[in-house]
Image (cartoon, rainbow, N blue to C red):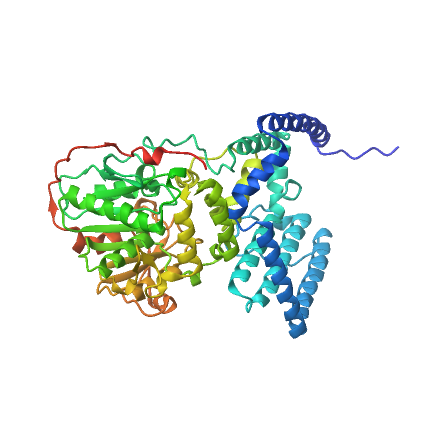
Length: 611
């Protein structure tokens, strides 16, 4: 009798363990189902109807928008097929030939023969780093089969270049979501990391992942970071200071000097109102505010209100004149200076430029010694996927939803921005938290990103329509503040303009046109490495990324970049050196004026509520 070959030592034990895991997992799912059933109010239909009512108008996933986009794409595609069938056939033939080669090479790999890679992962793609994706025939085939599918989709999309831009941006967005969702790394049976972790933990990773999922369902969002790791005012937004002014739109914080002498002309930081201010006051040495204060800069900060229904009728004009302009006056008064330096980020930069143009139009002396604007979009023709969220149909639906809710829930905006980078900001966390069963890690930038802010509905609707749909900022006099035509060509304030080379929200090319619009004699554009947040919050101690310098401001961003010189490290010191002529002489800090409303970070930044 032939003796059965010895199996691997733990093989049968693993099979038994997996059976136990399967039964345990089944019981766990029953318990989770019962928990969800008892914890959610009302019928499933009521829940889904309410979700669609508050979410659909704020995303591009409304059935009407999706169906309209697909119908227009289909019509355009068939028209292209009629006009140029050979080109599309060539795309299909190229894909078919590569697939056939993949089958042949995979068979060679299975038989232990030498094989070639048909298609490689794109540079910087971190999904397929496990050695099994290359060494094991099954996973190698899956990866390459998927990458060939992505290549086919991209080749087909390249034929839509003459489609109307709005429809094209939406169908590109949809296909981007599709190809990222179908990645084999997103499925437990086709992800070697998940399979090995399941065997190693005997299925505990799946049970922990389901627990993470249940917790996120209760919270209504995918938790990207440990939201208990930070406490605002304790270990984040913790730089010492005082709230010296407040109104219904904002608080103004003055930070306590740490040096014996400070520069006489202060800097007012103007963050975007769609996020909380402490992007610039993260934990420890990541804090831009602390770094500035420690370098003798007298720093003030705007902390915007987290709006509720009482703010539903606030407008962009209110934010400019009742918000920013009032804050500027208070900083002038508190610091006893005639002029201040403005430092504005993203939407805050748009608000600042609009206010400066408004003051110029009324021949009011500018209160600004200089302006620094970071990642502030000017020409939205250069925007990428963000344009997919903005069209007449979606804005009409937004306006209709505001009749019921009045404000735009902040969490919807966070989710929309995350979809612009689906792997990095969605699927990577899905794999780590739900499939691998890992707990969310503590990360100050992600904590800030998840601490969302609501928006007044009327103001947000105006902002999207005038700036992003109609692109009024680059059109002379098209944008208006309190009836006053806004023309950036009238701005004469010295300007420091910054873009980030990997910015997925505001591409650096959309920032550059400000350098051509304003009439400032002193102006400089700087390009920094990395993205919308990490490129800006890049403290020198990390010695990360780079920045590009070209003191000339030629007509096009491409020409600027061709002549730019690259330097390694943080841009913070470069900015501070540029600011020296505008910061004034060093002096002993002024005594704290009374009354102080409260200590920093103030009440407004602590407010958390939903629609």
